[in-house]
Length: 202
Figure (tube, rainbow, N blue to C red):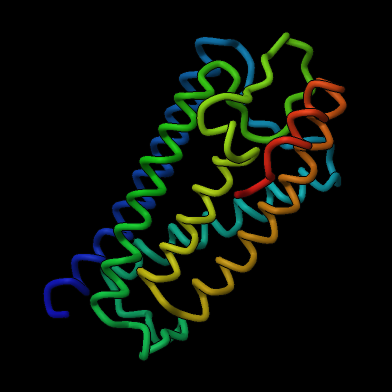
């Protein structure tokens, strides 16, 4: 525990900082290259709009907490679960975060020019992905993100991370339904056949 606890503590601060920088860099690079934003909030006040803003609030909170923990002991404010705050659990959480990170990057690369964050209503002749990981699940990217959220809870088992996990899963499952409605509207019968054949999650 003398080695693993500070390792995981510093890992979380660096990991979420690098995630933020990577996402920002990728988004700006795509915008510069393609001349449109791959990040879609949806209409103001709509369900996807609220989902995006809730997700951003929690992402900012997580990053702030993890960076502050590197320099100050704030665990008393986070409601740490002592029974779970053991090195095997922390290490498992760290490994799950790394697995999620690799999986998300793989899936975004697999989607290539069809990758979007949120619902893109532009008519740009995108293809319906039904092969590879999308042949086994309609939402493999969301599964990977939720696995990362579980990893964060295990790497910092606390009331704070539990609230983040519950909120994250609720937002993602609701967003998945919204995106499937949009895909059904965009692709019609081919998507309805795909939805009947492939499970939403597993």
